[in-house]
Length: 77
Image (cartoon, one colour):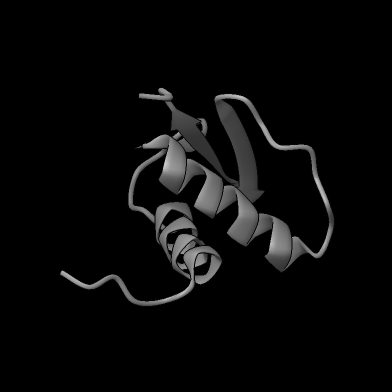
């Protein structure tokens, strides 16, 4: 299936839905496990959107959208 839409926009929609979920939670964290190739693509996409050059992460990086933390992981396989 073809994937459409910009990564940060999609994550913002998901974050918004999680913030409005009908449950009492202490924190909301999404963990995305990715291949190294997709991990680097995601990092570059987010870096470009924020408009700043950041050091490439080794195995993990995270962002926060609203009250939701999103963790990107790779196992370098």
